[in-house]
Image 1 (cartoon, one colour):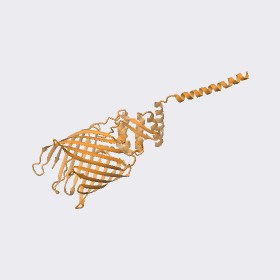
Image 2 (cartoon, helix red, strand yellow; image 1 turned 90 degrees about the vertical axis):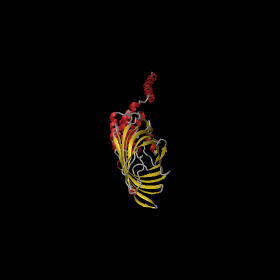
Image 3 (cartoon, helix red, strand yellow; image 1 turned 60 degrees about the vertical axis):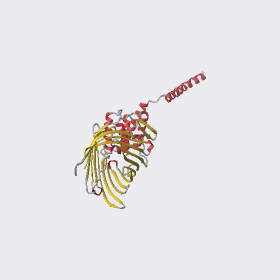
Length: 408
């Protein structure tokens, strides 16, 4: 009896232990619910954001996107976090890709658009204004010459939106790949250029370009250059530059140059106030083939914000049959330090850009006397592309334009 009672007394704890172990084994084998895990992680990320614990918020956003890469709120908060932590250019590029992604909710797209307009920093190529215009140096050094060009065209990707289909973000816990269904917005372009050339190497250029339609933005550029000393040992010049990009950001520059024959050296200073970036610039140029081609090497040393940059460029023109001109531009760009801790484990950017323009012009009116203008019509097609080791900065664009230019 005592033995039977003892066995009965031990049976209940043993059965309880078996139930506990069985439940633990079932729990270990139970599948993880990604949606539930993502929501729990995002709730923790929101709490960290409220307490301004950016590092903790980053970890929980990483976990959210690991379980749900298309989580709209997490992607929005990540874009905001990039901006809060001072990586303005990375934030702008990521925000632009989310704006162009049809899966981004309309309300988020509006917030992202407003944030993008505040932080600025789009690709310089997206803001570049057309500079393909004939030489306007006067035949007589004391004579002023004027040049005006007006054009109407269309671009398939005027804001240089990424051509990549996904973005890889590097977090402490490992990389996360977010799919991006980018649909770049085409837009009509209206351009107007004015150039004046005169004595002592005087040159004034003013350009504006409007993106019409859904985009509705514009950019402007103003340049003033003049030779301040001309000797057999070379010519010293001074150049002032101001530019406003399509997102309202400004770039101001002051450059001093020395040229002798086909060689030119430039030392300058650049300020980008909205990005909090100031740089010293050293540039060497050499022209060849009667000035039709130019090779350049430029180093931009960052004094405030962002990495220092080195660029190598080659540009020129080629005469083609049927009164057609071809313009070619190639450039290689490298950062000297990591671009963003979130992009490819803080790797420096490596960019390779190319541009090809074909232009056919015809004479509409020839000058019949002093002061009369020469008038030409033209049609232009162009293709631009950029390859990058960080896919967010790769893009493609094709476009065309027709217009009229006058010189007198």
